[in-house]
Length: 94
Image 1 (cartoon, rainbow, N blue to C red):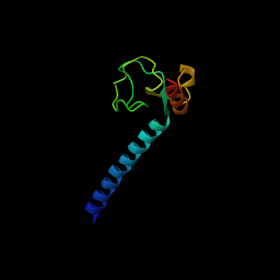
Image 2: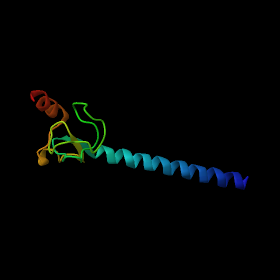
Image 3: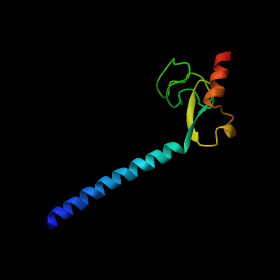
Image 4: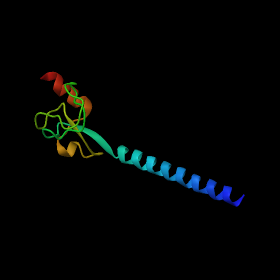
């Protein structure tokens, strides 16, 4: 009986640690936002608006409104970046 209690407690601890790590990752993602028009060539964070590529590091020019980087939430405007909607309008005008 004692051994079963120890194993159950250990399993519960491991599961609880997994939930804490998942929550921390969700909090980290929530503290960031996509900021368009601030990525340097080859330094973007994933696909662009036009769909010409779908991977990080494939931006071909600096500060393209179609390319984005994750930045701390609330800092995009300070960096003279664009929201997704603003970037779509700017890309459509080109």
